[in-house]
Image 1 (spheres, rainbow, N blue to C red):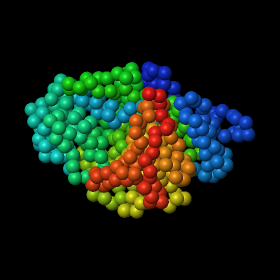
Image 2 (image 1 turned 180 degrees about the vertical axis):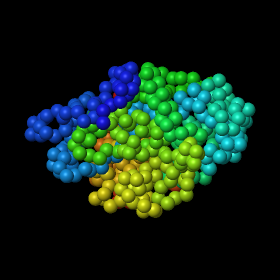
Image 3 (image 1 turned 45 degrees about the vertical axis):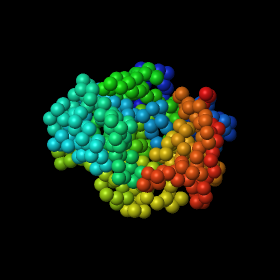
Image 4 (image 1 turned 135 degrees about the horizontal axis):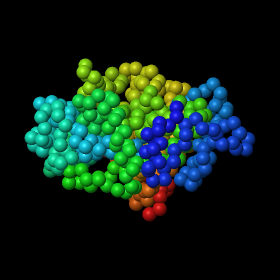
Length: 423
């Protein structure tokens, strides 16, 4: 697959972003002239580049011509700097694309929305548009502010909890809500929104913000060239490369196609489609669980990988797949990714955003298969204190905190943050 023309133009307009062309020729190196080779880059920490190359050489087509090992990547803040789901919702608010819900009843947009949040949204937005019509959030600051607060902070503008009564390891209601707010549009319309938001995000200068309601919010996004090169090299080495994202699936598809990844290689939050061909606020589930209760989030990411890629159905999709079927490589940056990255049998790459549960596993590295790399753009400085792995870094299904356990079931000791950017 060649990079589409509109993608090339948008990337050219961005600030010093260069993507490899999928399917390009591999650079030869001593002793492995025919093997796809990663591009040397100072963004790779320590021996990470060498470890990745050794893994590709051993697991890819050079050593095993008939094998097509699975490699799975998170998207936001793993493949790019910043969040494409955030950028798309912000674009929709700035362009007045979010629709007034049916009956002006905001509780229909999420089963987890609290009465306080539904009332706050109704108060802020009820008079702005008729049911089913776009809300004028470009000019109606109270409505835009309330939607943004519920999404970004999981609370109302008067600081009441916006969501509740959910399994904290299967769904993050605010992330799900970003997809549910797409209701009323066709899949093609949502793809068009995502492309427009993508162009805006790549054109926006790094560090810039835009006004939504009364708030300034960041919407710039940049591809990590190092991760794009890794994807390209893995694909040329025969790997089956996939993306699993907690952004709406149309958004992830638009961003991933620049790396040569077709729609069938991307899993995100999936809206159900109504009889009229428009998206509904209900979400496609996984593992036989109730509708709207599971998205591509923590245990949900494992479930969707097992169900959609490995063909494991029912409740078994929530359990680790047999090791011979699991992904050989995985990469992520946050707690959202900890389960599917931990399932990888070969190498596991953690992009360090100082998020405790993932970093506890990565630094503990009990089986020697974890790599830690600072963010490739504006890396975070060292965490000031150790990660509280032994006490509170794990989030239980009910939302309470507890210790992180390694793959043997042992409590992981608190870990120092040693791989990071400069202060």
